[in-house]
Image (cartoon, rainbow, N blue to C red; front, side, top):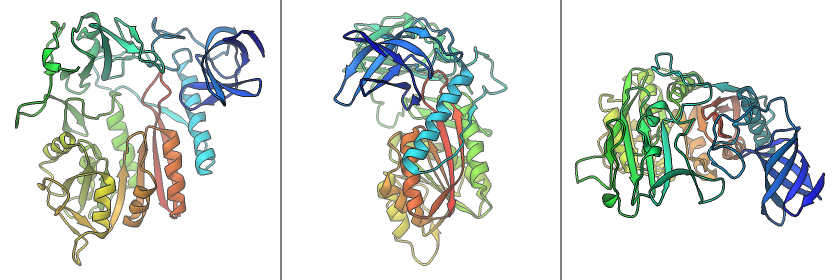
Length: 445
């Protein structure tokens, strides 16, 4: 390891780290290196210095890993677009890197030793498009705009990398031609397409969205500009899972890989093994994906309570599941609603429900839940929520996570409360990036 000039180091690259980096060392300090692979020798330009570590980009590969490939995107690479972390690695190598990260986080943060295999998420078999492997999957793409020019942010920067095509964007997004137009007055433009129905949206962002000059796009789209008129509702796309259509309004949350929602719904059912008459909780339920598939399994004698804080998602969920009398959607934060369910104003019965309530107060009450599924944001559930869940849950918990670090932290909290990791699956729902989707199944240990 030598220092060539103040900002360029020659490094031996070690293991992968969470966040799309590999780890090297220079004069006793850790260096987090992007655009490198384990086992390589590289020249890396320092991009950030702290007291304890450096960040750097590999700008020259002296000895390459056999897993290295030519990045397919011309905008990928040091100092360029920050959206993809692993375009320079083969797809099998990407999955192995993600598996190593999940394993390391589980062992370091939760004391769990587990061999992890990251599974491919296939395109739906009935899809009309067949992109190149690892590309063309992202059905929701948030572009940034500067002076009317569309691009994507550079890594850890507000600087814009102008692009005329995003290779991981779904072909339905690219058909709109967003990147090839000018958007005066906008700070951001999001392209949304449903891989199930072909519905398309463009969501505008800017200081005054009503003054944004919208160009003529290459295909018809529905436009989300500002807040809707009272009672009008937002434009939406429809997604299909297990034969049910789910309305997702505006920028509402939905899995961005065309195959991920169905795969996760099936995986959650396999993990929880719901039975007729079960009571189930769907925490952070969004527009009701897991609540919908669970309701079919628990039957008319069962009950599913979904909890969601976002008002538009609650409205979508109630609309999507309006034909299911055994589902109640409660509005409020999980931290607020779960304690009410746990200690809640129910009488001697085990459950009540009020599907049409505007909030959770006076809504569903359960004194126990046979099953719990939670799909929290990247920050995870946290100790307080875990404690409430473990007091309510009776049989099984399914935890869906897009962040191995917060998942591992929360698994440690579950362990403190007497729950054991029964199984863990990981899915490559975000090829070319460092992100990975996990499903942990817990039982009383």
